[in-house]
Length: 119
Image (tube, rainbow, N blue to C red; front, side):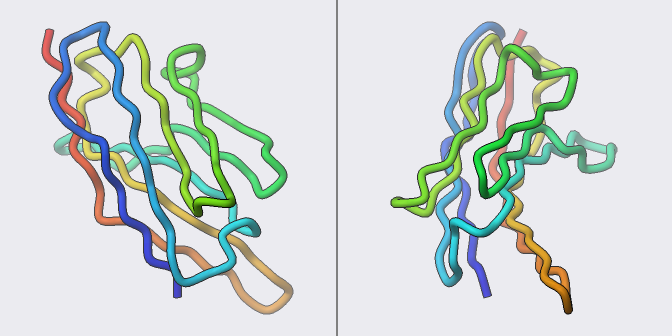
């Protein structure tokens, strides 16, 4: 069982920056793909960024060039650096860890952290 705890959310003005952190415990962190999702009020949860166990990254078109996902396997932590924030980035941000083997798929979620961007 993997436990994920997000931190770093808050209120920021448009154009500002925040760095989200997600600390993991209870599993072999380095073998998991790690992802950040956001969920705005009344909308579905959407993938923002992902980083594989090998360090390959992928981003939603809406955040490319502004957000950077990274991981520190020594600290069991994944980060999301968010620059040039826009009001439409306002959402609850969730951390996800997932992997699969021949028998099963495993997926874990954090509790979320609120990011609010004022215009």
